[in-house]
Image (cartoon, rainbow, N blue to C red; front, side):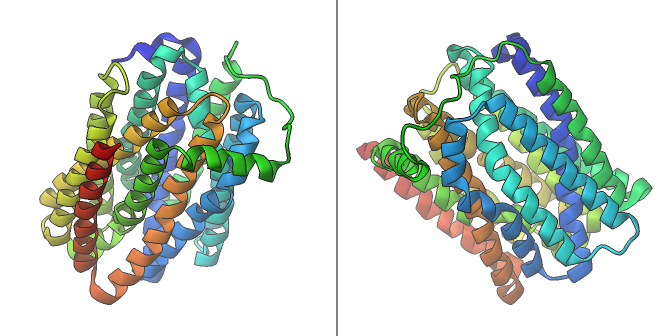
Length: 396
């Protein structure tokens, strides 16, 4: 289950990222609470998510080109440093209690630009820190650490708000980046293809990468399915403050619990994936994840008690990781070395860039029709997506 940890560089990456991501999930939780506390408007939650994540969609094509021609380790060092600076700026602005929503928007936009390069670069780097036979395990373990941090981060956020306030949470996140920067600096002998100058112009190579990805039906099917899943299902995370405050009447405590239980479910799902010895059967896991997500969203739509909602959010987390990690593994296995950076950047572009469009729409629908009916509609769409993907995959 933990074979990838036998590689020293991956161990450094794993534990450095764990510390950093705990801080990042603290910031995600507290930032959403801050925005909802200031505005009491679900639409604003969707808009902040849109501003923070949509740059990954706009810049995704160029990011993939840049990553295919970059030193991946050096690029990740730079993106992590800029992310640390963003967290520090947010902490300083919040410290005096005069933070305004437009400032959160600007800083979220800046972090979104950084993430457009950081996420695909880290995904490619993971495969270079281990041997080829351990790549699947490394991807699954990376998903595990992301979701362990989703358990610990929101829980710590609830405690930190009580003792340090919102600004203290942002400051803790800024300090957490020291761990991953130190880990990246300590790596030695990272196996990666040498950076090279593009033989053609960037737009020609971007177009060639798109032709490669969307010209192969298995890759195209995974990417399109991921796009619909991100648009329809992932906005439930953006709506959590509305569930906590208006439906469950549990405040920031309920928000932290819902976030932590989603992380717990995702961690269990990632550990199950880590037990697999290869990529065989990933398509079936994606179908099961989408079907389970439909059931979980339906449960969230009509639950009025915090324990039941926590259970459904654990199921949401499990199903999310089944779909996302399954899609990531499938794409890396289906891509050759020359195009992998661009294909993985399309994954990040769709995963991070399409979700804010869904969040913006979901926030608007929740403002007009209520969060319950909005989430029930998301569940119905997931049923249709699972059925359509299953039919097409069998045909391929």
